[in-house]
Image 1 (spheres, one colour):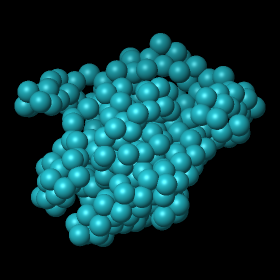
Image 2 (tube, one colour):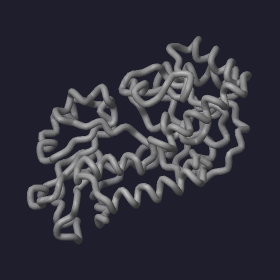
Image 3 (tube, one colour):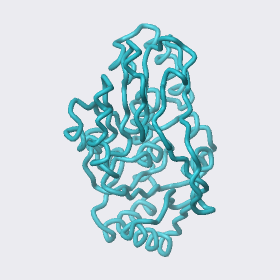
Image 4 (spheres, one colour):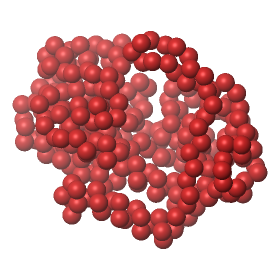
Length: 288
């Protein structure tokens, strides 16, 4: 198995609001070899760094860059001339692959150890975990709160997982039609997902009415929410199929395996470890 090293990015804290706390923002390029305690790694994998990492050419191993949010500022990434320093470029949203020559689709995923580690209760009718900084989203959230008792906490990791595991329905609204993490977290949690009808590969991965439900506008969202809160059997059927699909194909383990096989080729040790970890998830969730 490959040795893994974590490299912390030097950054400064920029004060924001009390709710969000300080943001960490990089202030300069940095020299990669000075950050590493291994002479030649098996793979260098950079997740959305906002500055150039110097010294990559000193290493013979494959280098990969992961573009996580191309929908926010596509031009910013196109101007990253240092993407040429990498052998592989992964992109989270399928519709943006043409923006980055030779990029590989690597959709978001969910962490079963966090999401499925919480008790399943289902006492919240519908929830949304995220901000209200989009006018259309804010309008939809207000409607769902008034009519269906939506809960809209701001939570991360285990606190987020607790809310998802308590929710009958999880509502999703994206910023720019991106296939976001909320889709995979919601499906993995076993709640029924209602999300926008978007591109970016949503229907390459999931089937309407089988794994999830989609809406076009606020009126359709209202009708679908009312329907599925009332129809418990159909809601739970879709939620169960969606969760099974997420566990089988869309965990962090699946994405890690894709990266390793793409950059390093198939490896028996990786295959054995992946099989062991996935089987553990399957057995824990009664999929075997």
